[in-house]
Length: 307
Image 1: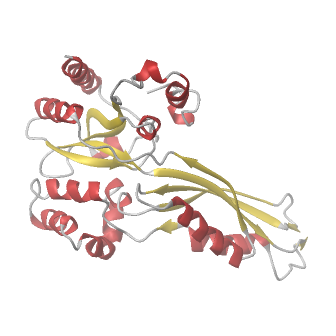
Image 2 (image 1 turned 60 degrees about the vertical axis):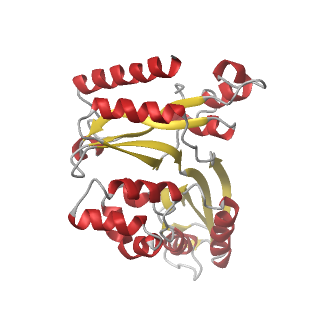
Image 3 (image 1 turned 90 degrees about the vertical axis):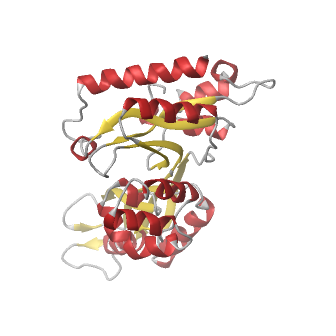
C-alpha cells in the first residue's frame, strides 16, 4: 500500500489507479488484477483454533458535520433555545449502531467458524450462520460488540469525534458543531443513510454539512490468489482455520476494487487480544520474530502467484 494510506490515499493508491492504471495491472486487453492488501490479520487465543481471516471487502467510511442552531445570549440569562443543548440531543439521537444484520460474507465466515468452536461459542456461530441469523444478531448485539470487531461487522456505526462551540465561558453560542465518523456495511445504501440523518437533524433545527465518503467498493469474489492465501496460511500456522471476512476499517484496496480489481485483505501476523488492543494505541507493537515470519509468508505468496 502507498505511504499516504492513513491520510486517505488520495495522492497514493488512488492517484496510481487513476493516473497510471497500466502500471498497477489494468489495461483494455487484460483481465483486472488481483490485489493483495491489508485489512485482516490472524487472531490467536480467541477461539479454540487460531483464525486467519481473508477480507473480501470493507466498511465504507462516511464523515460529516452536524450543525445545531440556537439563540445567543448571556450565560446569566440563558435563552430557551440553546445550540449546545440542541446538539447534545441530536448527538444522542444519531450516534450509536444501526440495526444488526448478517452480511453474506459474514454469514459465510460464521458457517466456517462454527466448525472451529464448540459450546456456547459454536452454538452462536451456528445461529448467526442460519437463515435466522439477522434475528439472532439483533438479540445478542450488545454481547457481540463487547467482543470487539466482530460485533462491529454486524451493523453500521455512527461515532461523534469532534465538538466545537462558543468562544467565552459566559456567552451562550448561537451555533454548535459536531463531527462524526460513520462506518457502513458494504450493502448499506449511503444516500438513504445520509437522508435519514439529515431528517433527524432538521427536526432539531440543525443541518448536516461537509459530507465526505471514502470508498464503497464492491465485495470481491474468490479468485486464484485467494486459494494461495489459504494454502500459505495453513502452512504458516498449525491447525489454523481460514475464513472470509470484512474489514471494519478502510484500506487502499477500495481504490482497486472500485476499478474492477479483485482485492484481498490479508496480513500473516497472529495477534493475541493483548496485541490487538495496541493497534493505533499505546505501545503498538509486534514481535520481531512474528514480523520476520510474516515477511517470509508474504514472499511465498508473491512467488506462488507470479509463477
